[in-house]
Amino acid sequence: MKVYVYENGFMMSGKAWEIKRKLKEYSKEHALVKDWVEAVSKSVPRS
Image (cartoon, rainbow, N blue to C red; front, side):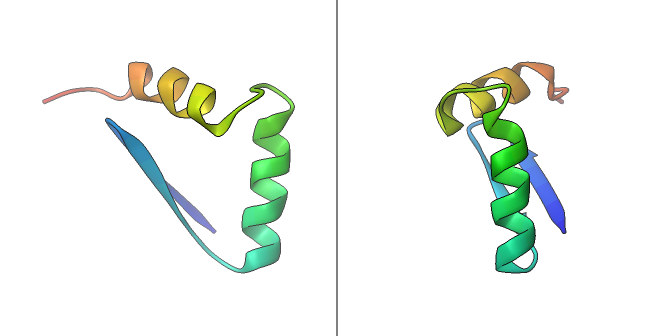
């Protein structure tokens, strides 16, 4: 399972059950996927 985070979004690759598990894990910290993307995009180094 891989998670690629971009400035304005993300991409997950892996098996369906892996992606579901990862989204469930992230949902414990963030109510919406949008909230998670915004939080992570702030920590992504810009070049």
